[in-house]
Image 1 (cartoon, rainbow, N blue to C red):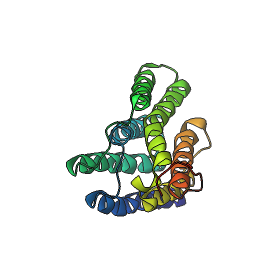
Image 2 (image 1 turned 135 degrees about the horizontal axis):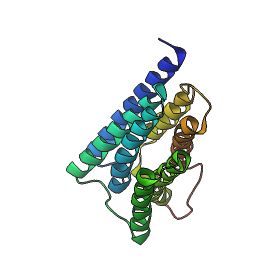
Image 3 (image 1 turned 30 degrees about the vertical axis):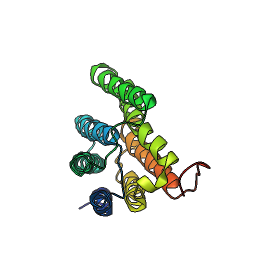
Image 4 (image 1 turned 30 degrees about the horizontal axis):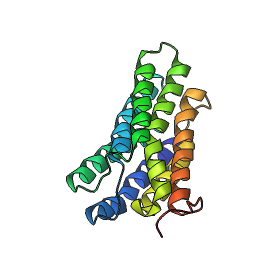
Length: 196
């Protein structure tokens, strides 16, 4: 097994293990995931893995596959437990709509680089409602899941086969996004009006 394969599998294991405390917090009503974000991420990462596989990526897509399963189960369980947030305002719907538009552009553009940028933009738009929610109330998220996600994203960068944009862009974006949410959860970036 190559070093890249080891890093890829390790990143996936860290990501999946990080979800366990999140499921526990969802079960007890402590974590309140933004359902539309997690559903969007499930679709976008599944499509992203498929696109990267078609472009020749192999090991680095493991984190996207793990992310897709994680996202789908989190959305389903939070819905089942009735603790998930479906919407917090008009901006949530705007960003979800922009995410859907990004998905459409990604699937219809015949230019791989622009399609990839559209996919990342869609993923970010799905994530902005979670960023807003977490900024307003960091206690609605579990710090360990975002620590594991950021660590997983960092590990996945070591699984990159070539430093081509199509292979580096998505894993790097995931690391930056997860690290941003983690900083909000840890209150490194603080909202002066958030609940204590």
